[in-house]
Image 1 (tube, rainbow, N blue to C red):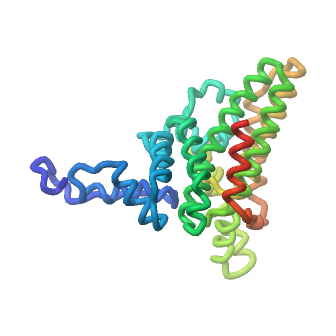
Image 2: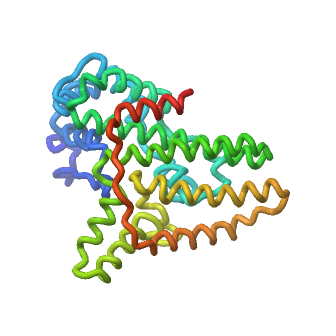
Image 3: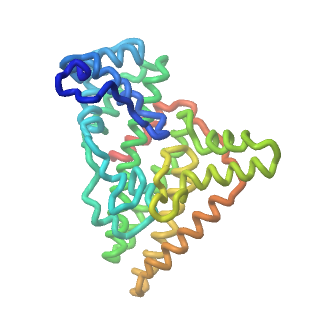
Length: 310
């Protein structure tokens, strides 16, 4: 359609640069279908796409996807990604700062997303033999739980600042619980910290070379390009939630809580230097964490989402 337009200029085609995201294939499928449709209808396209993706479709499935479209796929730009010039897909993924209380909220509609997940769960038994249905259920849950964790982190910082330590502690405990469980759930996806480091190690022709590649692989997804690109390649992977993002935040908030409780000055600059050193030590670790995969991802998601919504 574009190439036949009198206003096409020198345009002869288009492409996309996913930049190593390796997920959310529905977005790319839709994008590449656009040139072949004069007036694409998103909902009609989703009906055809889900039937091809899962082997069948239904009114209940399309109802769930309506809510997922409103909750996730109506976002034009994920502003959280570069909030205050700091990379990271979620606040959880960013190097910690008490300034997160100033964040106005991620785009999209979390309530619609959660409703869509609930509807997917209600029909999951009908699609238990469709691996891509399970994949999408896990992926949507990852988005939801990460956003709920962000909200709780903001509330925890505010509680500590207001010296409501019981509330702050309870919120941080809840973040620890849901993020740890999400880390386990993400073992259902193909890409994990285990697979990333295992692939890196396999490139080495000897132990020294393998260790070098593992260190580089750890650095690329964390500090990578220094202060301007730290967490730019943040990953929603098993191993990263529990082993990197969560302990980094807990270390920072423990120091903040202590300062607020003692009524002393919180030296954020010193804490940032401490975080950088903590990250460096994490990068130096030679270990490759094991893969942990939940036996029943559907029931796992159901329990996790029920606990979040209670």
